[in-house]
Each structure stands twice: as C-alpha cells, then as structure tokens.
Length: 445
Ligand SMILES: NC(=O)c1ccc[n+]([C@@H]2O[C@H](COP(=O)([O-])OP(=O)(O)OC[C@H]3O[C@@H](n4cnc5c(N)ncnc54)[C@H](O)[C@@H]3O)[C@@H](O)[C@H]2O)c1
Image (cartoon, rainbow, N blue to C red; front, side, top):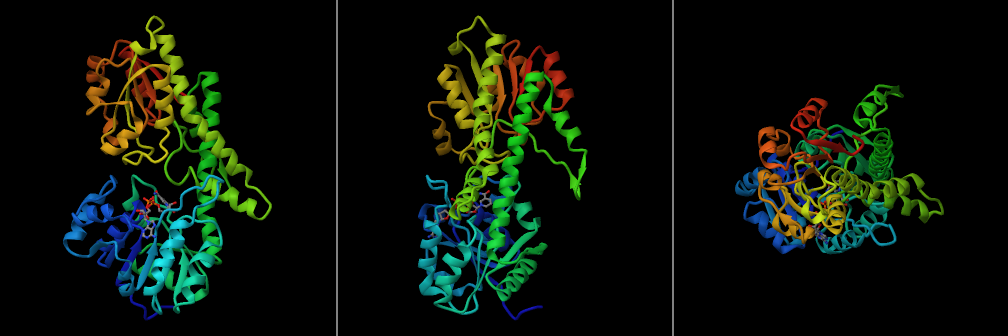
C-alpha cells in the first residue's frame, strides 16, 4: 500500500555519530535534511562543511551535502515544523544502576511539542528498552497532533557506517499499523533497504537489544576460548574457523574473534539495558550480565599476557627500560572512536606496571588522546616502532595491515614482541615475524 505522504523534508534530532551518518546519507540521496542538536560547537563543525566524526567517507559526504544545501545543521528545534519525517537519534547513556538514561529522549520530545503538526512521521532510532517509543514518544506527541510513530533500531557498525546505513535491513515496529506501514514506505523510498516488520514498537526495541546481547555474548565466548587456547599454547583462530564449519539451524555456528576487548558506546551498555528491563518485571537477563563481566576482563587479560611475554623475553631489563609501541587506540577499526575503548584499561595497567609507552592512532583526535594521559603520543607508525621492545596492535586499522617488515627490523629492538590485539595476522605473516627474530603473541594465539 502506498500513501500520499511526502518524505522530502527530513529532520534528524541528535546530530551525534548516528545522526551524522543518517543525515549525510539521506541528504546525499536528495532529501532536504536538517540535522538538529543542542550542542552549538557540533553544529558549527557541520556548518563549516566538516565532519565531527572520523568515519570513513563521512567527511566527503558532509562536505558535499552542506555545500549543495541538501544538508543544513541547526540548534533550532522549531525547524521540525517543516519536516515530513523526524528521526530521533539522541544519546541513551547507561545510568549507574544499569538502566537506560532517557533524559535526552524526554528533553528532545518536550522541545518538539510546540512545533509538531499532523501527519508527521516520527521515528525513534536511539537504543532504548521496550515500551519507550510508546510511553515517551507516542503518548506525549499524539496529545498534540495526529502523528505516526515508529521505532526502527539503528544497527550500523562504526568503521563501515555509510555502507551499512544504506544496506542493512531496517527493522520496523510501529505503535500502530498505519505508523508501521508509513515507516516501511519511508525506508524503502529513502534508503531502498529491505524492511523487516515486527509486531509493534516494543518488539523492534527488543530486536536491537537482542542483537547486541548476542554480539557481546558471542565475543565473551570467543574470549574464554582464547584463554583456553593460551593455556594449551595453540592458536584459537583455526579452532574458531573449524568450529564455525558446523551447520546449525538455517546457518552455521558463528563464533566471532577474540581481541583485547569490547568497547564503544553500544555493546558496553545495551546488555545492561536488557538486564535492567528484565529486572523491572521481576526477572533477570543473566547471559547479558555474564557477557559484560567476561568482556570487561579481556583488556586486563591482554595487558597481563603482554607483560608476561615481555618479562620472559627481556628478563634483565627493568620495566621502565622496556618500551612498548602501541598501534591503535580506538575501540573500532578504521575509526577514531575512543568511547569505552578497551585500549584505555589495557594501557593503564601497562603504565602502572612501569612500562614506557608510545602510541599512534591515525584516526584519534587531540582531545581523545588526552584521555590516555600521561601516555606519550607518536605521530607515525615509525615513531611508535622506534626502539620499541614490543609492538602492540590494539586496533586493526587498515594503515597497519601492510606493515613494512624491513622497517620493523630496522626500528624495533632485536627480539621484540609483536602483540596481536585485533589484527588477526595470518600464519604466513606470523612466520615472517618469527624469521625476523621477533616473538609473536596474541589473544589466544
Ligand atoms: N554509535 C553507534 O555506533 C550506534 C550504533 C547503533 C545505535 N546507536 C544508538 O544511537 C543513539 C545515538 O548514538 P550516538 O553514538 O550517535 O550518540 P552521540 O552521543 O554521538 O550523539 C547523541 C547526540 O544527541 C544530542 N542531543 C542530546 N539531547 C538532545 C536534544 N534534546 N535535542 C537535540 N539533540 C540532543 C547530543 O548533543 C549528541 O550530539 C544511542 O541510543 C546509541 O545507543 C549508536
């Protein structure tokens, strides 16, 4: 069923990471997009045709769409009056008690009330516990106007956000059938993506939490397998590959890969949201709690394995005489996002142990480097490697993939430790490191 609705004018409330990607992609598809945020300095960055976030392709898209006027950015919420569709992408941080902080959603909705009008389609995309769309969005707005309200979780992953935004199926849950149909029509016409309709907005809210609960739990499983592999002195990667060859249900076993840890804004909080929601009706979500506890251990475990390997390799050196070059600080490959990055606790431990550390991340901005104080900053791969007794890969940025073996030999200390926290080096490359006289260690490798 096609409606007569126009989707030409879109307002995106919350111009953070998700709002930036959605706004730029939709503007590039020819829609008139207004990105709205309460943060004035953020809006200034957009209006100077720059991207506030270091996400591949985003700078180019923002530059292009701001300059051709398909994207505008503003702090003025009254601009939503002109919108056919309003996407809400404000932050939903974790509260101390493990529940979702809905302050930004409530304040966004209350600021919208004077400007809402009939027939607008309002889609909440922020990650929230079930019932939020109904209670905090649909109820207050429908007292003011005859609006359509749906929840469509944002499921893209940073680092490949633009592609994923345009390709991942969108889950649609409406507060009523008309809203769901209109939301489906909007996504089909705007992004051209497949829509997966679920029973209602609560069901769609649960889908998002279930996705992230699965990912976090899966990574916890891979991390615990890595610990067993370390004990057995075998490489966990071929074990996971072989394990994943088993057909199960409609797919295969699909264990993800272990690393120095899980970070970012979502996986570190959404499993807690799941448990807090379950507790709200007298139950619990124990697997989500367990995966959080297990995954919080991985940076500590990784730092300790690196320390152990260095102590064995350089027994005569004091820790402050041992230099570690770290490549990658962000939690996610090919991004500069340091929110809850596992590099931070791992580095903290290594600094406390007394190591001298220099770190390089081509994506991380100056203010995020400050999070790692008193860490010394390197400005190139070469500088991080120069004289180092260990080269530790804490992120798998593409810049690190073709690391020059000749430069490694020239710059690293003889017999240096190569620590694989997220690169998943192939056996052939590991053999090459060993031939150069280096020691190789990874998480479960
Ligand atoms: N970052 C991701 O990879 C990702 C992926 C999937 C889902 N999500 C979810 O999407 C939501 C947004 O995440 P993000 O990473 O973009 O967060 P963010 O913190 O980068 O952005 C949120 C923005 O909302 C703005 N804001 C807060 N209150 C406002 C108000 N009343 N009016 C207008 N703007 C307001 C803030 O100033 C901020 O710029 C969260 O619920 C998150 O869990 C994020």
